[in-house]
Image 1 (cartoon, rainbow over the protein chains, first blue to last red):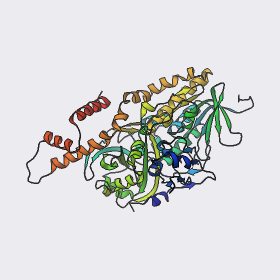
Image 2: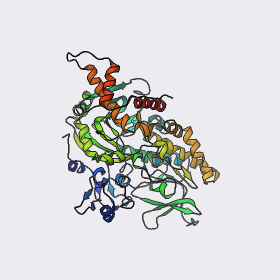
Image 3: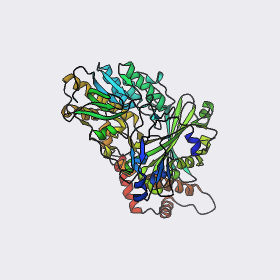
Length: 95
Length: 442
């Protein structure tokens, strides 16, 4: 099928999930200082979930490690990221 | 943190086994140096995404003659097609060449699948004598009196010493930042590419795209295809699949609050694109950042004991007509390796000795190309060139070809009316025409 939902897209990608997150979000900053919540829109894996209280919930498990959220975030220190441990994270086969 | 005499020391530590890193490791190993090539993925290419057309065939051919006979390539690109889009229309510039160098060795470009191609290239570096270590993350550089003397990897006793470090760790290069060579980026300097590889029967690909054997086509699209986000789209033919994707500048994705994968669906649904992808089946979805600002985001390229190459150095030429990264990655990796070889011969790894790297980059036409096109990215990757003018062209052609009993209009008054409709000021149009000329003509 040609047209696919985001869930269908993500099911085609292989992730080896590390025990600890390589990206952490400081939801206090999202709540108090950010009105745009750009991460919610731009993340190609749709990993940032806005909460009712203005905070952001982040799932690191199916992250492309692209860095878009970090670049798009306009609040210093809200998103901290590094790479997952060696061999973990996204593993493209065709890309 | 000085290396004790008993500790193993490499001549060259290359961080990242993409095209820059593997090319660097291959050349340095061939020169007899002791080379360590580090890769954080499970295998080289596991983290790497691009279109991907590799336009560096001639470069690689000098290292590995007739490399395409043994490498996992998809199709050689001898046809390129650039389309200007409105929501309903496409106006295309169609280039096809069966001539020497395009349809014959060493070929102008090949479509590749990065996890396969990058893995093969790293294996060539290994075969040349480089020591490849995968599943290893490099977190920092090691310093001694301010000089870079190695890298710290994320594991017990993770200190690895080398005479010179070549950072080829990609667009987000943590290493270039840790070494103080690169600043933080601005949102307008980077674009996000989202991509799908979709499976399609090779016989259908041949028929649908008018291909005869292993030849292939690269389509690129500008205009309404990305709605009001600055960017473009692409579709490339592989052996039994298509690679297609949408590229959007981060700042404008943020500003317009657009979800990149929704733009991708819109692209596939466009009336000019839908028939090309009909019947295909999604195999893999992917995403990656692209350093699009070239000259403006170039880091300091070397310091005592370290050089930066490939995407980590921003060596991706995104200048409208050109969207090339792997070739410049490879050239910069080779330039760094040549510099490292010289430094080893002289036993001098100071910044002053490594300054030769810049000269090598000029000789290999990397810095010269990026300097020549230094005005292009900021201008070409903007709204008018990527969105408005393509739509102006498409809409003008709609009117030019329309036959409905109304009197025929000549091109100038028609174009004038279109510019009014799209709220383009004639003065701005002239200034942009001059900018296009300055970017590409001289």
